[in-house]
Amino acid sequence: MGFNFGVIFVMWAIAQYIAGYYGIVAYAGTEWAIAVILLSLIFRFTLPITVAAFYGAMEVWDCSWYLSVLIATPVLYLVIPNTLLSVYSNIEAKHKSAN
Image 1 (cartoon, rainbow, N blue to C red):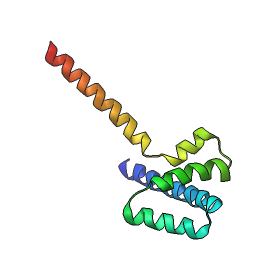
Image 2 (tube, helix red, strand yellow):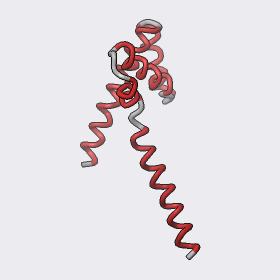
Image 3 (tube, rainbow, N blue to C red):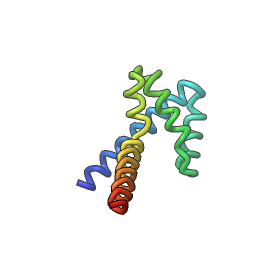
Image 4 (spheres, rainbow, N blue to C red):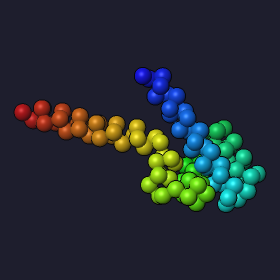
């Protein structure tokens, strides 16, 4: 199951980069798109790709805003449940120590 999840996550990341590429091409041109993608891979700073993926999915692919968010931010689906679980664990630990 972990391998399948990893493959799905990599495919999702590729889709995000493709949407980001099209978003940057529509806004600034092919040269800038290639430069931004290479720099984001080299420096591991993906915020420009995330913004461009949202723009590319929404404006170029003509997706709705919520589908564009789903395409652009796959990491949020891991961060949000983990954060909620952490908050729940802290509340539960404090409740047990108070009793």
